[in-house]
Image 1 (spheres, one colour):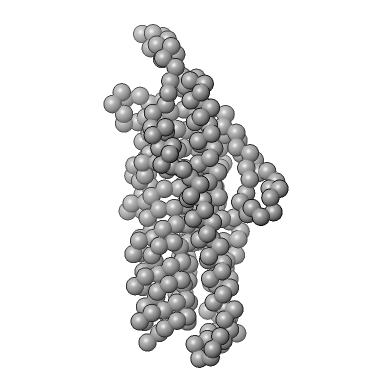
Image 2 (image 1 turned 120 degrees about the horizontal axis):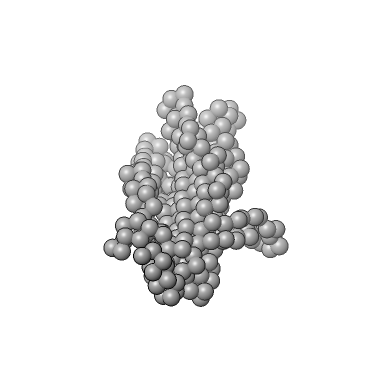
Length: 282
């Protein structure tokens, strides 16, 4: 019967190191599922549950967020090769959320709104330039960005009025300024929900090497046999995990989705512009 903290090897490409209870994974641990798929995070009754990070080497993707009894439910999906990320909910492996964020760094396109089964339904599309800015606050770990939205369009694919796009010139100046601020704030919070790519990949590389590290294995064998034996193993393991978890919680608190949700639903447009646009199309 396994208790506390230990290592279990299942096959050449699969092992678990972390906390156990009643012979099941329980609490914080690292599971190498196969040669391409790894998870570090919380477990409950042998399943990935609550906060964790899933690393898919084959698809160059990281999943930061909330798991529910083995299924990834909500958080950040980050593809570090194609340079896009999505913040929102997943259902059956597809993006489904009424207010989410999708950003493509290569094109500079930012979408904030509703996605149904991986399809953009309605929301705001911004075309933007993003550059990193030096952070003068030594106590602040987040990256600072200069975020400049050049144009914003409102997209409604399934609305009753059957509109496809509302041109940015149709927005009232006050609304345009407000929507820029909201998109900026949401993007900044979303961007910092994902940790720096190199840091996370190095952490997974370190965890993946545990099984083949003879000194580490010896320490693990002795861990539950002596008081405080090699306690640094568990401390190092958990402190890294806790750092990512705290950044994730901090980023979610900054999103402010509830206060901005109603504002994002429908743009405030210039009626005169709409009237002229309608007449010009007759």
